[in-house]
Every structure is written in C-alpha cells, then in structure tokens.
Image (spheres, one colour):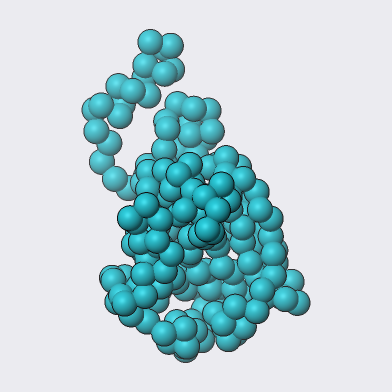
Amino acid sequence: MLIVVDPGHGGSDSGAIGYGYFEKDINLSVSLKLRDVLKANSVDVILTRDKDITLGLSERCDIANKNNADYFVSIHCNSFKDSSAKGTETYSYPGSTSGAKLAKGVQQAIVTNLKTADRGVKTANFYVLHHTSMPSILVELGFITNKDDLDLLLNKQNLYAASISNGILNTVGLKQTNGSNDIEKLHQMGIISDYYDPESYVKWKDIAGALLKIIGG
C-alpha cells in the first residue's frame, strides 16, 4: 500500500501563525514522523515535501496521482481570531465513502490519544481533496492560535504521528507491528508519556521513568 503524506503549506507560504510559530513547520515535522511510523509498519510512503519549500496545490495532487497512491493524507493546523477556538477536525471530499471512513478513523484516534476537543468529521471541497484520484483526507491537528492546542502541537508530535498511523492502519485493516502495539499499550496505561519509535534506541532515563511508574516510585 502506498500513502502520500502532504505537509500543508511550506516555503513562502507559512500557513497560519500562532504565538510566533508557523503552521508549515509543525505540518512538516509531524508528517516526517508519520512517514517513519508508517514505514515501520511496512507501508510505502511518499511525502509531497520533505523540506521547507514552496509547493503548489496542483503539484501536491500530481505527486499522488502520478504515483497511483492508495490514500492521500494532508496535514494542517487550524487557526482562528478567537484564541479560545480549539480541537481537531478531519475532512474528506463530499460523496467519498472511503474518504469519510478514513477521516473517521484518524479523527477518533487523535481525539482519543491526544484528548483534543472533538470538532468532528466533515466534508469540504478543498483542492487537494477534489483533485486527487484516491480516497483523501485533510487533518486539522489543532489550533495553532490556542495555547493548549499549541502545546500539544509542539510537544506531542510523536503521539500525533502514531495516532494518525493507528487510525489509518485500523481503517484499512492492516496489522500493526508488535512493537508499535506494545508501545501504544504502554502509552494508554500511562507508563510512558509519549510515543517512541520502536526502531530507536532507548535512553536509560526513559527506562528509569517507566520502571518508577510501574513500581509506584
């Protein structure tokens, strides 16, 4: 299976700005982590951009269409003039049953794991949803203009990536690697506070923290 992950905005297009942070940077960082988690689960991934470059909407769609991707996932952050607006919402193209199913799976995974406000699954005629030939979704991770959401966007990027991956894999019926499942279970139990790449080296301070939680130290 091939998934195209699209980090929204980039280059001269910063996207939304909140408290001095640019949406384009958060989108890219989460997307890079999502790529790694999906690859660890034997999913082929193409990023529309893997650096801070300007990329048109049609170019993003062309990458997905020319590579005959099975799914297209666009990563974004929301914003609003009222800083109290917060939460996660996920979009699919109107009438796309497969897109709506994928959007629901990803939305539920993020809201469950990150405890973000659930703004629901919606449909929209966004360019990248309309002009891609495969089931496509656009994820608004949270509001960069809300301090609580921004804290998650900056400090829980691994968990966002893991949650999106879980939502995708569960929806399409792909089995997750044992390592990923075990790590997710530890997170849900509160033994670890964030998602860790199963292929990465573990630091002793992380082991110590987990052991102390287990023994109640």
